[in-house]
Length: 522
Ligand SMILES: [Zn+2]
Image (tube, rainbow, N blue to C red; front, top):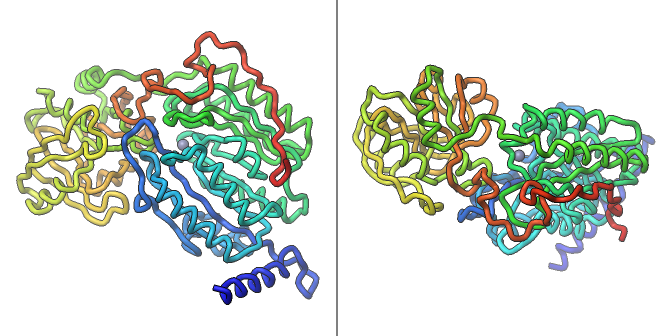
């Protein structure tokens, strides 16, 4: 043990001696920048739990593969000595177990300790992780990172706009930003901006921005009402880039926050960082006020209806494919992904009972035992078994599926094995493990043609770009599940009150900027 710590001490002294100092030829040594992060959004309104195996963890140099802007030939890669530690993300789901959280954080901290010190740290999180028995996990995580790296290190935090920004996270982050688009077409661009700001502040010697304005905005809305494709989300988020591009401002960001967890930190936030105190403050206040002013204008971004109404419309429509979002169990928002309620309703409809009924693709339901049976039956074989409701059986029990196997695919990174079973005119995708169906190729790989299908039902909220582009018509069905879009049906006990839209007659809130102390100061 002693030898190891002596080695670590020597290593860190050696590392320290080259940090921020010049090389013998007078040129500046490259800064040392660590990368770490955990990303998941997890619903506490779902009975599902997320364990460590559900995270895709990249460790060491494998972390670079997540960031195309850090490929070996990129300019950013060449501007620092990078020390990637652990960067893990999981499909949204239920709360993360304490064991999984402690294990992933522990591994990260150990790796960070191994290569101290750092000029900078790129902290890449989602911001809506729920952990069993722990409030504000990202705040806890960054405090523990600070305990290891200290306060000389500039931390640049990059987040999803559906994350939450507690005061603890705000204080321990020196630079902080989030996506400006939902759907998140700018996710890597946002990460790149977080890294660019970090490199700039180290290279130009300005260090931590002098001011961080933080404004909690008492609004809690679902993502399906706050897309930046349509107003008011579109115009609101259009204000962010010009705000961030001002002289004296480093970055500006608006967080919608995450609606399916019940903690005091769950609400919208505006943050602006920079060196010009007056501009940082006024910019944050103007963004927060702009958000508050349009609060009543947020609507679901596509028509919504009950499932029965949605199916009636889809069957009667002459526009195909008619896409139906099965919203309540959307696994990419935190649903368990195995609620069988919607599929059960579909399979009882008489219109789909015979093979020449309207063609419908259902994506998807996990059922590992059913998949095994389908694989044994082979393509063309008959299969009968149950699937789903292993995690979330609150609305409907495991579903009996009896039909013909039309496809078997193995090797998918999320699903591992996928099968398609044809029941009447319905093609049901059953997976070994849950998987979101977001790409056309997810369907065509299984011999399904969503463009030629009459109806496509997907466990999703708003359509991701590839699905959106192929839809002829679309409705979002208000189905039950862990991410019920009707927030007023959920039982919040711990969020701050008053909160829009729960408290209809609330007074105008105080949206003046709070200046958060710099990291390391009181
Ligand atoms: Zn998001």
